[in-house]
Length: 160
Image (cartoon, rainbow, N blue to C red; front, side):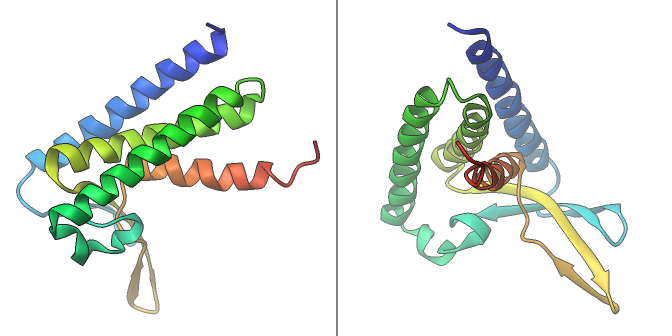
């Protein structure tokens, strides 16, 4: 096994642990709280996401069939990402970014399987003109996926 692969596996485990420990900590707090961390910019909240990104299809997920569909779809995406990750081992940047996507997928699949929902807790917002504009609550797994997808898109524009 290459050194890069070993480092990626170590980082995968560390990020997945950080994701799960942070979600566990949030779940241990009193039900559905909000704590201001940086006034006018950042809160910790407790949110249960029964849907997919940004809670899309959340109303549909209360049925086991829909939840099962989300889990199966996520597992297929993970299988494709693992295959792509193995194929990209010679392309360093892409393999690291795919590893981040795998961290995010694994963390959120674990939540769905064990809790029936994904725990979100990071609430970023900006106050403008006296009104707060919030980004949908997210977690470490979501951040890994989002950062990786954006950087993968940017790397796709570079010349071979």
